[in-house]
Image (cartoon, rainbow, N blue to C red; front, side, top):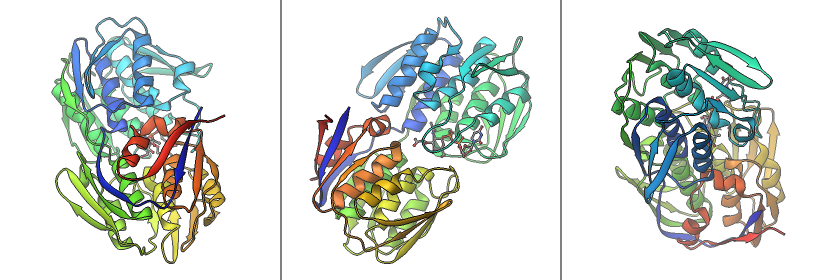
Length: 420
Ligand code: EPZ
């Protein structure tokens, strides 16, 4: 295993190019299961999770090849299996995204239940309820979801008790080939879902209601291969904005989409960061003093839960006290204990954390527990005095392309080492 070693206190100056969004690429790669033929995807990030879903698709008979930087071609013409094994699904719960497209294309799917993860139980009951509403027989057997339908799925009305992101994506990919019209209500409207909808429409799907909480899908008999550009990763963008706020500097983020971060930019400006934004760039300057802000994570366009750990790290350096309320996941404060090791004064009370600002952190050995928690440890390490070592950074490799190189490129003293 590797670790990251950071010598804190070095301001960040320069440019960082933002990569394609992991959480847009994953459902779009799954959507290529819906029809044979060569699909072409541009701006695909080179991440462990992307390699995982491509390996999963390869076990189903999908072929793919990299044809340029960030560009892959995928062809699911010769599917040989409809089963996503526990061995693969347990490493990445987003593998559940093959459920909808396999059922729609092949009439059956056998997908391991993902099991929980560090941030919560993360059931998939909404996915299962929705597929049943479209006419599938779904049983849970020996830790697997066994779904089947004779012929095509039938259009129906699905209401989500909670606007689940991958639940919405699975239902969309099931409904596009169903017989008749499906109405999906109380769905999530994260930008990554919009990117998936653009891909499905390019493939010939008929979908109304993009970016709203109600989608109407008119099923078609077949789809065609298509090409799509993955949108910029808004969570990666937010992570680097926050990093500059924590340690100071003047950085321009390119190939990003500021309009996708309405809640974060509002909060960062109140905290005192200087933000300039264009269609595809941010320029962020940290001005030293920081005001504390209160955060409540919400579904889009509210404050993203995937930036909660990162902004908590920022609030350690702010003047005053910040109240952070995590409403999406039941156990997403794993980073608190590690931040405390660096000297942070944070108290957790149920779904809320109270961050007393004004702390001066000192470097220490800490451990990454999940993807976004590891990002918060990097941010804290950049601003701490002395050296911070972060172990188990395979968590980071799942969702951040070339993080060490990108930060070192703007002046951070950061390197990757073997963890003895
Ligand atoms: C997606 O996960 C993202 N992953 C997560 O990003 C993100 O944190 C999350 O959405 C919320 O924005 C991908 O897109 C691959 P949910 P997802 O279904 O779809 C409960 C990252 O860091 N729920 O919207 O799994 C669930 O337990 C990852 O990149 C049910 O109860 O999240 C949670 O409390 C982490 N039953 C809430 O809903 C269900 O059937 C939101 O979950 C589904 C979800």
